[in-house]
Image (cartoon, rainbow, N blue to C red):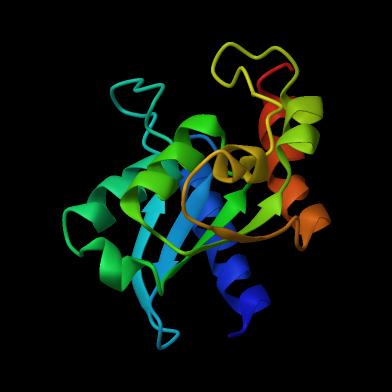
Length: 159
């Protein structure tokens, strides 16, 4: 599987979210055959849903479309490491692999104490390790590319 190709597509989805005035996060679900099944940009806007993270929304959509048996062989590619909430959604949905760009630690350094993104510096691996089934994690990958979107966005918001 070409992780960099799919991850760069997640970056494009994040860029689209930013161009639409939203937070620069994007995620996609890739099936066992390498085909993109779903894409999701951050859903904070228009309703200011603080739980509208791209990964969480994508997992909600995935879990209402496929069962865990199928999702176990799928991969979620995401522009940034899933936070604790999103990692929980991945775990409960049954997705078997996560590939991410920007680490939570680096995101926290970029966002500071911004009220729209009070980043949790809790690695997704730690959340998954607390579970009863494995979730394979690859990342951070292409982190400088992933960070570039956030540097522009959060700097423009004054943080």
